[in-house]
Amino acid sequence: MKFCVFDAYGTLFDVNAPARKLTKEKSIKDFSKVWSIVSAQWREKQLSYTWLMNSMKEYKDFWSITEDALDYALELTNFNKTPELKDKLLKFYRELDCFPEVPKVLRELKGLGIGTAILSNGTKKMINSAVMASDIGNQIDAIFSVEDVFVFKPDPRVYNMVTDKLSLKKSEILLISSNCWDISGAANFGFNTFWVNRNQLPVDRLPAKPHFVGKDLFSVRVHLDKQFRH
Image 1 (cartoon, rainbow, N blue to C red):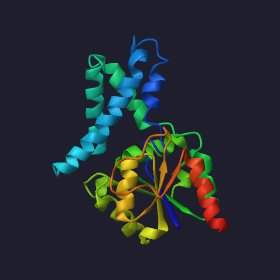
Image 2 (cartoon, rainbow, N blue to C red):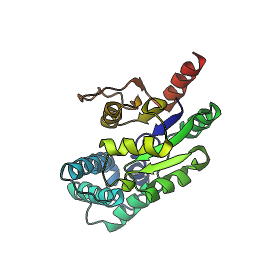
Image 3 (spheres, one colour):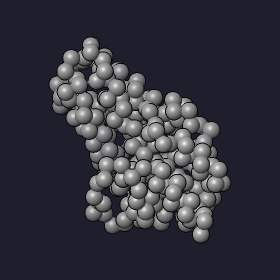
């Protein structure tokens, strides 16, 4: 195993953090009652729009899709007439918090001599912004964005971009994601896969299953340590 390639959103970065943060602001009345619905719908539409774009053979950059998905979620919950809410949520999304274990795990992987990369639907600007906000730039060797191939995961062209740019065999890469559909796409392509099942969800009924499963990124580190010892 020469490279660990991480999904960004939901895997390294907490996509629920923006809405959760705004519950602490008293100025936006009643948002604390619906923040989890807003966050869930925002994420659900963000993903489903990418899949539909793929199906229709259309492409729109991920930041625009993120804004569209948020518009839907705010209208659904009757907060679409609160412009400052949208502005604040998008600001927080540009500077997403990483999960607590991320910096330590990335440092330890580098200590093992394993390369680290991010493969994301996000634009390079989005990913770089989140990486800088979390101060993990020194632990990431490469960033790959679908904006280079104009198609979203789980299209095989996205995963093929990684092998081409790293000049590695599929078997030399471990794709790590909290999204089981992403794991299925990567496994179907031929990558080794590790599903970070943070919410203890069932495995998606898709053609390819995850090779390994753990509850957080510490599980990935433990798995790789065992592999190196053997």
